Length: 174
Image (tube, rainbow, N blue to C red; front, side):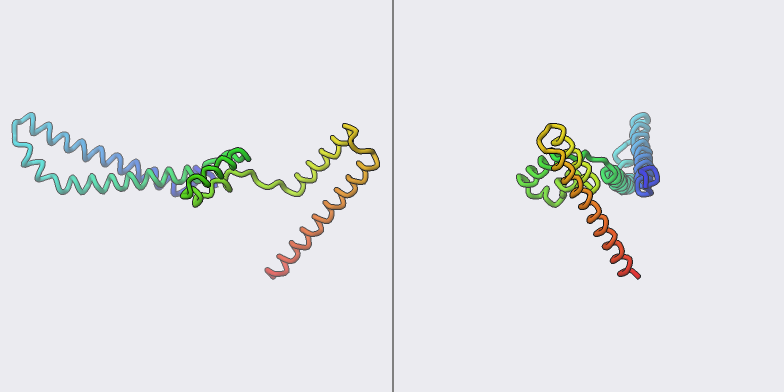
């Protein structure tokens, strides 16, 4: 689901806009009362004391809604953030987690570590390494062919194992 379709984001943004706007209206009303009291020379203290309880309650409620809405929007953005995944970032996070134990609960090192390569990616890498060794003259043609045959056989074994596991899952769910 895209960020633009996230109902919690829109709810948070709407709450922040409404509470922020109403907070501006309440503070503006207070400023208007103070200004009119100063302009007319009337005692402001009595008027402000009269308004203190309802205005204080409204300001407190609106500030709480604004804070919760803002935190909610930040939470949605943080959950949808795309973090760079690399060994360097993961090792830096591991060092931080070792240094500051409360950070372990966040699990940043697991989040930042790159995903394990798939069997196909590992096979492609192994084949590329074999080709490089053959081109560099480190292995003979016969050794190259033998290793490629073994690599292809391992791939078919992995495919057979995956198919067998898929069948077991299907059988268990039936």
